[in-house]
Figure 1 (spheres, rainbow, N blue to C red):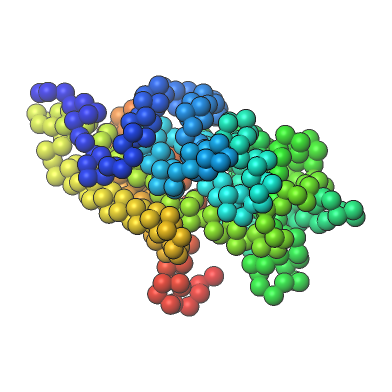
Figure 2: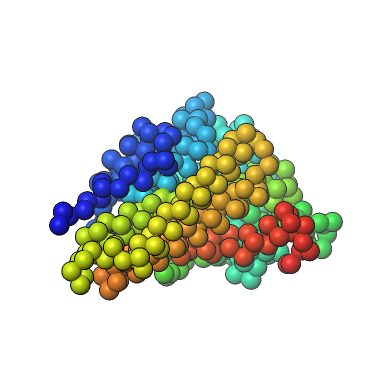
Length: 399
């Protein structure tokens, strides 16, 4: 029997026909970071410094920054393609994807002075904006109830910040952090979404001066942390936009975050289907390839149909975002569809490999663990369903 190779299936048709040069370039970069590289990092809970450096030097982490500030000035779809191809190659963009979606808050709501101060440095790779401090231990997904407080100093030049954040990934490897804080107490605002502000924290100055970072050991190697903030001083000029309007700014960027996460899930789905189909054609049991059995081929085939459907939804959400049209419904549905397609493909791939799926050398179990996160973050499946029920179907609010 002829041995199948990873090039036997062309999952880029009809998918992945846009930005062909970017796709090919990302594939070449990822070829230098095979499974062995990621397994070693996984074992040590280490950060993929070399991988992030390669993407940075190639300019792919600054594609959304306008040319005037040293970036490529490309639309969100280009970022989507980059992350999709990274995951389709078996790599992980979890170490650097936040720089793409957190960028939107600064790009759309930052002052000209802030853009000129930070964006060229980020584009050149001299500054990293990878940390996004929102979630807190006691509030979870209920962002409007966060407790981290920022009060103006007596001279009005600084905010004095106190509080705690959790699941703040990459904080140990970021020079800047986007931080959501409450600047007006919740009992003094008309709506619970008011009184929140966004601060851009210089981590290089903050660490050891009111900010402490502790790593969290987790099921996946996302270098996540919890952050303790005690009388941290943040210059007023580092506030993004107007005081008290931060929730709106963050919400604006969350649609981009969902689209980007969905794009990664699309890449993962492609990887799992490719891996499963190749193995199903190679593996012979009872004198026949296991892929001849409908119990093996049907789950893989169904995963492919879900891939095509999810990819179309991602494209729709991205097009609406680029056109400046409302896309909350579409971004949420795209994230749900893509994350579930990835999970079903992961299950089919693991089941196809049987016992070998649990062996680390096949990389299936590592990727399986990684896509499971997509059901929880960013934004859980249940919250997406609640959003659709209330805002699309007009059902009573459930939370």
